[in-house]
Image: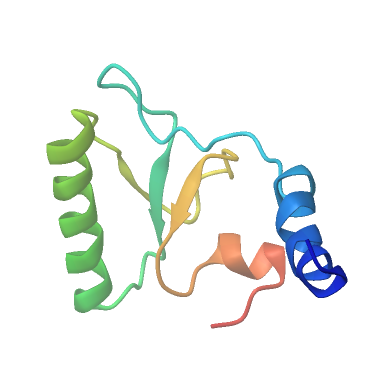
Length: 94
């Protein structure tokens, strides 16, 4: 194996060790700890997106994720849609 080939393969061999993270489990056995968070003044299209996301996640996982207001306390297991207070707390601007 040439030195150039070794240099090209080295990052690929190291990558799995550097990018090791716990898997994200959205739902298991028809249950989920996650909730979909919207602002109270979310646009109709954002509300529709939340309904569609909720519907398709139920279809895929069997779990119904609740759609909640951004006035609820953060849970740590959230899907944030549109501009809302939870994103503001994280310092994320969209």
